[in-house]
Length: 149
Image (cartoon, rainbow, N blue to C red; front, side, top):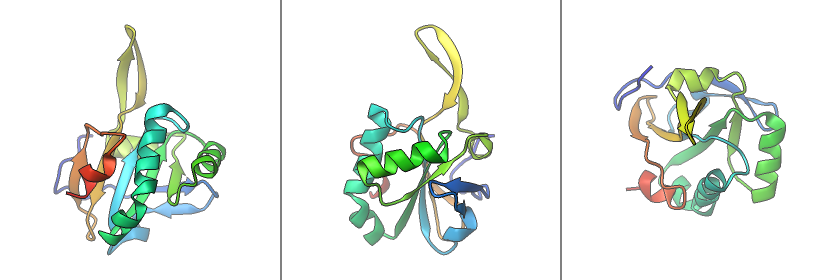
C-alpha cells in the first residue's frame, strides 16, 4: 500500500514498551510524528531517537506528539528507552501489521542479499488524522529539522 500526503492515516493499535495499548485515535486533535525505524540500539536508530529526545521540548512546543514503531518486542523497547532516557512511546509491531498498513515493510538489499525490513519513514499526521507529510529520506542526526520547518 502506498500512502500519500492528504490520505487518511491508517488506524493502528499496538502495545507500547509497558504493554499498554496505544492507538491512532489516542492522538485525535493532536499532531503526531509517527516514525518507523529498523531496530533498537543500532547506530542510526539511536541517533534518530536521541535527536528527537534532545529536541522533545521544541517538538512539543510546536504541537507534536511522538510515537516510534519497530518490529522489536516490548522488552527490547523498554531497554532502549531506559538506556537513552527516551520521553516517548515505542510500539512493538512484531507481527508487522502496522508496518504493512503504512507500507514500510519492504524488500531491502545489502551486500547482494535481499531481505524484508523496515523502510525508515516518518509520517506527520495532522489533528484530523490526515497525513500532512511523509519523510522518506530521514536524516537520523537532525531529524527534528525535517519535522519542524
